[in-house]
Image (cartoon, rainbow over the protein chains, first blue to last red):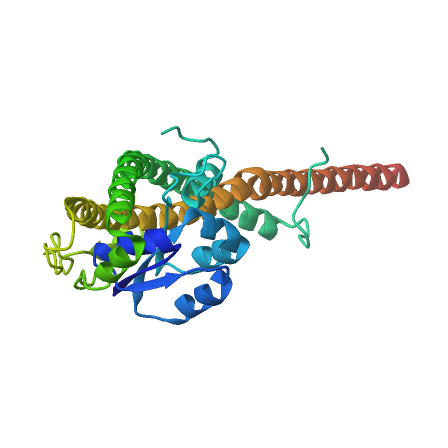
Length: 103
Length: 214
């Protein structure tokens, strides 16, 4: 299965350098791109910029709960991690265990 | 709180036997599920620890990689870097296998098909060393990202399963078992009451018969 990414322009350049070919660059049309990605069944991992993941919001969350594959990983963009953003996995952990686990 | 009893039970001896059987079964199930939950949580913590460590490392590496990339873009121009980035060869593909942790199916990744090092496919003549750095760093990141994806996939499946188990344990503990106890008590009391009534009736009849005789 292939690796894919849904990210902004700069992250795209970096990931392309690393050899990832299936890259969808978002220019405000992330929902459309996301639909394209979720329709394909040859993708194993999707890297998504935190900002885009936030914009997709609930849409993405439901998909993740329903499907095991592709695995979705949130990656920081060139400005680094967003401070107020709670990523999906931490949220899941909190829900399952009841307490937050510090890094 | 008013003790609730199960719907549709009639206070008979048969029903009492049935309820007793159900109660032992529910308690056994509760114990088992509790053990399963604890085991899963223990396993869960292991994976979380690994994942947090990895994602912390990754954040730092991302920062470094982006720094190199931005520097390369500054020196060579964004357009050029973009062009070169399209030349790189494909990193390869992964495959999935199923792993099993205590009955929970977890997607396990097989990253053998991923190349860990990519040879630069651009000419050295027009490019700068920062680009090499950026490529090397991003490439190292990809294999880490795949590891992270593996862990996060596991975390997700485990979390869903833990929640399910937790819900089951809670339903048994807080609803079903108290209800069964209440129902058992209700039936026992009804039966005793009936027995007392019977006993009294018999005594009464005996008295009446004796007074008639006399």
